[in-house]
Amino acid sequence: MQNFDYHNPTHIVFGQNRLAELDQLIPADAHVMVLYGGGSVKRTGTLDKVLSGLGQRKVTEFAGIEPNPRYETLLKAIEIVRHDNVDFLLAVGGGSVMDGTKFVAAAAPYAGAETDLLQHGFEPIPITEALPLATVATLPATGSEMNMGAVISYQGGKRPVMSPLLFPRFSFLDPTLTFSLPATQVANGVVDAFVHVLEQYATTDENTRIQDRTAEGILRTLVEIGPETLAKPQDYEARANLMWSATCALNGFIGVGVAQDWSTHMIGHELTALFGIDHAQTLAIVLPSLWRVRKEQKRAKLLQYAERVWDITDGDEDQRIEQAIEQTRQFFESLGVKTRLSDYGVKAEQIDDVIEALKAHGMVALSESGDLTPEISREILEGAV
Ligand code: NZQ
Ligand code: ZN
Image 1 (cartoon, protein in one colour):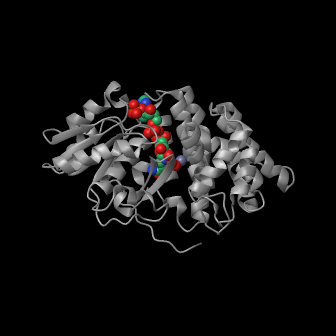
Image 2: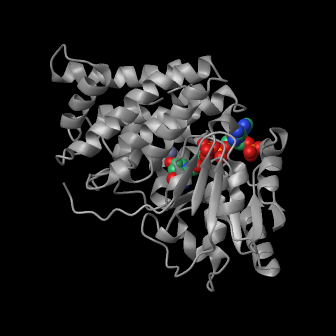
Image 3: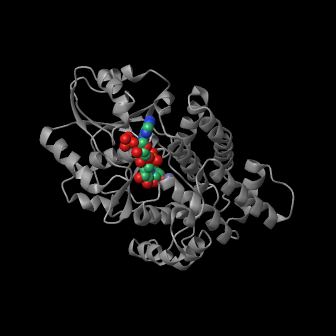
């Protein structure tokens, strides 16, 4: 196991009908900006509940943070925050709204150019303060509600923004707020959470038994709960388990002391930026092919995954690995998430564009050991046509 520090300060407020407790968690004299997306929180009544929970506090609403939040949109929020002295940010929405809010929290008090904060990849951004932020999560998927990361769309790329100052102070996880999600977003959430676990698990073996068994527990839960949630959209217990799975998949706990490989995400981000494919759909396309190409590097963990997540024990090693990859692909398909580039209208000749984008964004030494070159990314994408 590698050395690690672990500190996650986010207070989770889990359960239904708790939004009135906002009143106890935000300073009474705060000027709160409530940030949200394209309007789902208005249609579902979630926004009204949030505003009522905020009581007499001064509130400014900022609407219109789009999926894959754009830098230009967030700049408008930053200007209002600065001009009106907003001092608390409350994100109400999915990963895009939570991520966008994190960027506003970092950039509003930052003295330099805002674009500086988009140039640091997975390294912490150079900030010494951030506005306090909190979330009301409406889409279980990204884990943004309990982590310190954001992904911002800028100049045709998706830029990670990381800082320990960006952990939400608190996050409300009310499973009933997710009842209104369309099936495609539920399925996307299951796939995103599933792949988050795998990016921290299907790597080199570092003898990390707690992390491994917790990861396997989340994966098995998602295999059970994904179809159940889609079949019974109003089932509270299914939603509750899905929501906590997604949060635990990327709140840092299973990622300590392990080798991580975010290649599927990095290649997937280019597919979103170039072709507009949903984040989770890109992961479903890339992961099975990546595993086939990288079977040798991941052999021990893929065999462990086959046995402990899918109960695959028959056949030789290569057969067991292939069966595990195929079951994973079929699991995504069974949720309604397609796993081929051609399913999204992307043709083999467009792979060149993806490779150029990876190079332009410096994604030339991916994987847990930095040996995944653009040529290997090409092989992976060719295997996913
Ligand atoms: O904009 P509104 O109208 O709210 O509609 C949204 C949006 O159209 C809708 N939605 C959300 N909650 C709903 C709802 N519709 C009905 N009922 C509800 N309760 O869902 C649509 C998608 O929302 P979005 O926030 O974009 O989805 P998701 O949560 O999957 O977030 C995706 C973004 O997160 C980033 C991705 O790159 C992408 O930009 N990620 C962030 C990570 C992180 N911060 O740690 C890690 C992830 O790997 C990921 O990269
Ligand atoms: Zn993701």
